[in-house]
Length: 71
Image 1 (cartoon, one colour):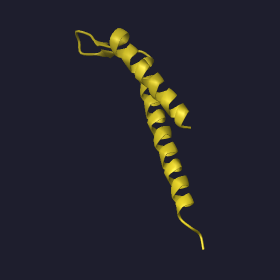
Image 2 (tube, helix red, strand yellow):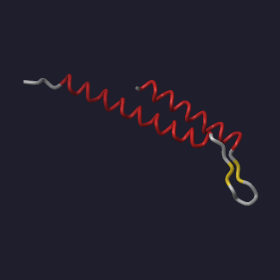
Image 3 (cartoon, helix red, strand yellow):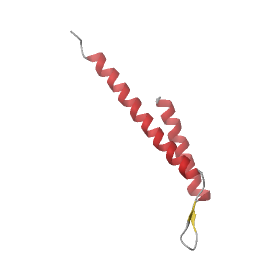
């Protein structure tokens, strides 16, 4: 799960960089023009952060269960 989170973070960051470099601009009338890379990058980044947090919590819970002796 941690690897999937890292992969999604990398995909999200790359999509946002591509969006900002090549496709995103504001025209003379103040209208934002963007591509599919912006929502894909945002969703992938949020999912990656969520998976990374969940895997970290899961790991901490497993370690705490091992250290607490059950009578």
